[in-house]
Amino acid sequence: MNHHDLANEITAMLDKAEPPMCAQCCIYRVPYDIRKLNEDTFTPKVVSIGPFHYGHPRLQNMEKYKLVYAKCFFERVSRFISLDGLINLVEEVEPSVRHCYSDTVELSSKEFVKVILMDSCFLFELFLRSYYDDWSQDDAIQLKPWLVSTMRIDLFLLENQLPFFILERLFNIAFPSTMTDQRPPSFLELTFDYFAFYNSLKLTHQDVGISHFTDLIRIFHLQPLVKRPTRVQESLVHLQSATELADAGVIFRKSSSPCLMDIKFSGRVLEIPQLRVEDWTETLLRNLVALEQCHYPSNSYIIDYVGVMDFLINTSKDVDVLIQNGVILNWLGDTDSVANLFNSLWKNVTYVNFNSNYSKLCKDLNGFCKDPWHHMKATLRRDYCNTPWQTAASIAGILLLVLSLTQTVCSILQVLQQSKQ
Image 1 (tube, rainbow, N blue to C red):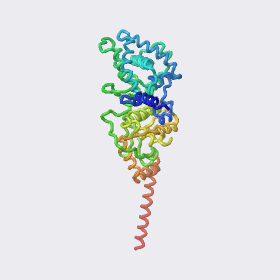
Image 2 (image 1 turned 60 degrees about the vertical axis):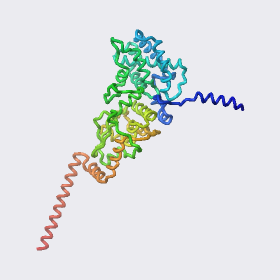
Image 3 (image 1 turned 30 degrees about the vertical axis):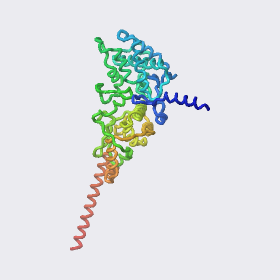
Image 4 (image 1 turned 45 degrees about the vertical axis):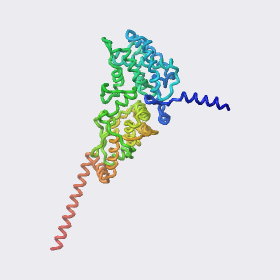
């Protein structure tokens, strides 16, 4: 063995060595242990954005349509910026864009710049047409309702993202602030509009900073920053299932809060915001869980919510309890599917701290369930006062028993009085 040659080879390898991820990283390959639970929920079905799924055979049909959109966008902005100007901008920030991806992107500089630019221009044109409701005849032919819906879901998948900063910079150079006539809204406003369906909290684009579309969808589901609970260094204590809680006398009620995270327990009432479970719900929750595992391990509010729901739902009977009380709106039809969904969302997840509000909630619920008096009252309500007729019959039975006892006591007293005489 030639040690000198080997030393040179190792030195060359070490010179090229770089950390696999840096502080700029925000777009991740989903960890294997989470991805294997349901790979389909992390893989785009119709459209590829960014380098991770670029060239996938299943997504080639949409590539032709993306070119049409990019061409239309170039025509829109040709009087403000040349194609060379857009290419130059992407080339300038290429290293920063590459650093946003957790995996090394094995595309050449030329191919990488092309992917970033063409995908960006496709998104610009798509969002502008959506905002202005300005669809062409080709759109009517190509964009069937199922495709529009599937594409919107593909665009919030964690692995299917472009860094938001490059989108904003390209959009701003294409529509400069000096533009006086018909300047469109900012790209962040267009993004809010495109994903408005998920914005149940009715947030506005002011003072919101995002890394990419998945990040925005997460923000749509969190409480406002000033209202977010603190984090505590403790694990989630055990929580009984919905059926067990109901047996102990806990009343489930649909909360009026638009924020899914806003679960509260007071008295004996557990208020939970309604969750509509649809075909895409699993995809949404799994991608948000994956994002928090990779990027927000110390602020994993979605994972906290999933953990609480996993404890509440063990079987289809627990799902039935939540459906009957309006907490879950089941559009899957099969309650077993809902139970299986929540039983698997929290698998292979690691957490370092926990939502302080949920921690207190779990302790309060466990304390409530340990009180035998609550169990006794719940049993009385369930067995004797479950319906108006049952309540009336129970009251009548109690009155009859009281009258019988009274009559018996009076008879005994009368006998005793007579015996004394």
